[in-house]
Length: 218
Image 1 (spheres, rainbow, N blue to C red):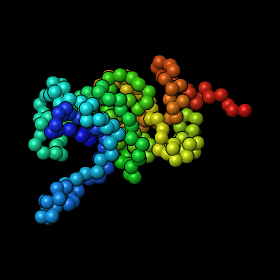
Image 2: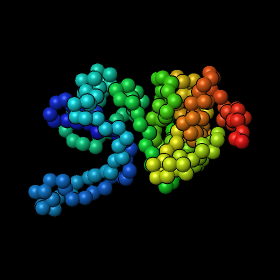
Image 3: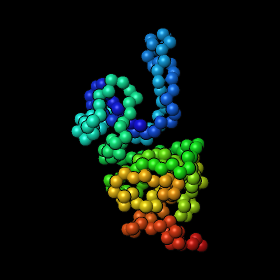
Image 4: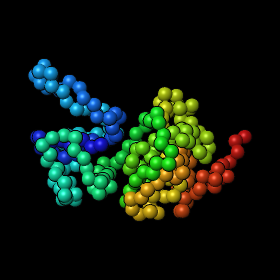
């Protein structure tokens, strides 16, 4: 989901995240219309990136790079065409660094394949375009590092709850474009230290190679 700021300039995208609920109907946000019994549609959003009103990704830039879409809609709740999703996410990521959501879902759909895209390599969840991929990986493999077994929650308590990096077994940069993946088969949870060590070599170390390199504790 993206939040589009309209009205007073500057106009543009100012937040991104995921829908935490389906669309639901509730009392209208306008008190006068609510008093008249009118309803409005809502969705609960979980934002992972939120900019100040002055730091938006400008509508002018969206129109220049992503033509074929009306960036001045008269109503809310419009859908981005599927062919513009990956370019839009790439443009957004170039405007503001991503932050992966920490919350996990209650349900995992086995075998679901997720679409991701990438333009450059980074270590901390840079390419997880679809947060469901991260969520499905952690639901299947848990929050313990697949290499060393480290748990952020066990070490840091509530502060570490839900935190872990997610590693692509095949580097995203090797694909060079949007592609489909199976989150359960292609992703693994790893701690920050192991994630950094995996990428100390090019091509990156495998999970098994790094596990074999661990020095036993006395």
